[in-house]
Image (cartoon, rainbow over all chains, first blue to last red; front, side, top):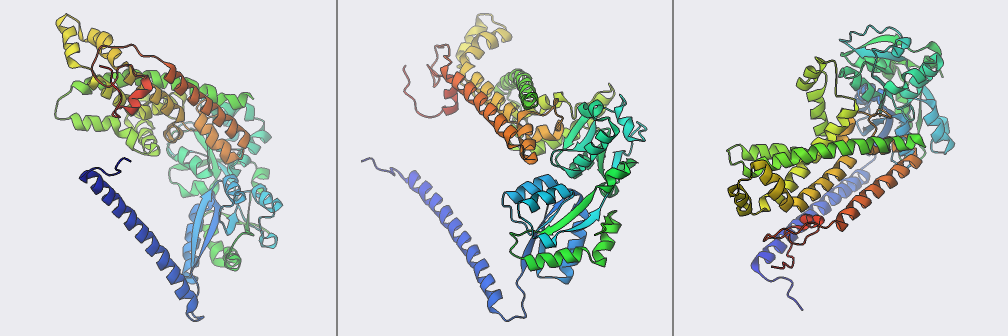
Length: 283
Length: 244
């Protein structure tokens, strides 16, 4: 049988690899131990200590900025709660939740995505409520010379690049396409679309000046100094824009999640929502 | 059905043009660097290999800064009323930039293994530098060049991050197969995602299999590459039986 290790160099290599592997094992064991011991510490002490919990909030991209502000406020009065915010297009988030992604709360920019989860029995039905309204607007880069003033201007030849959210998964894109369909211009402008994976990406496209026009929520437009609003979507489209919220059945902290959800309807949270340009939904 | 196939045509166009560009530029750069002995050699070499090491999104972002509205190239192009961002040429540019290091490294390795004496012999016989490259260096380095081209092809086909940043997702114009798969999964359109995935697998398998069947011309040279199939350059360094 051949010797496995034939010289000093191979010994040294083996030794180095062994030491690295050993140190990795030790560090992972120790971190596992320390989190285990700290968890047992917190439960074994008296009732005056509250367990620290992490709430996973999956929220539509347009809520990113306002939720960061609200979460900072929430953590001040509830120091044991850490909010872990996961933003994206509502369609993408819905998919993640359907595929088992850990989330305690879902804040969608469209009723369709929440309905989808409700139909699959993934939400706690009586926690569902309509939280916010928003408006869809047409924005251009600040230094745009095109002089666009209405949705119908999109059919002009000087408009070559229109950024919208992907109408198959981004609510803002769905609302935008609905507006185009209503005005009957979709087929004429379809070849100019640049699809964004979420509404924040659409905002970035316009802010960067590489597209002629884009369609985002008024709250997104407010958050950037490099774009300006030139038109609003038709009123009946804007009336459809509702942000439902709910606690998910799979949540392991449903009481804490409900408390957070209730906080989102409190006066302090309302003030922040309004400051960022949202309107509260009628329930 | 047409909608499903559109990314395939876009990808094929992009990959074809990108491979041709990288083929030419890769050989040129490899030829230059294999002879260059100046002080800047490590720097230039690193610059050429950079896109391979950087995350594709970083490369894409860098290209966007350079070619976007406020970048040097962007400003230059806007003098002619054109822009590269969010257009089909952008897919070619990103694919070529990301694939270039592979072509460059493989070709340069192959060039450096060509026996210099034979090249010099050609020169003493009166061959111009072009003739030396075309008639001596390239044929002798051919397995490496072909391997580089195949790697290039594969890398361009799979390029996603930088393409999405610079070219965006414009259905029918810049939606290459990887971008289409990504958005199909986002949209929950698993049918299209799987469909495109199978297409890519078939293309990849076909090109690698074709490689394996290629026979290379037999140069009279010492070294690792006697009677080697083009893919063997990928395993260069392992001990092989060398018929003298």
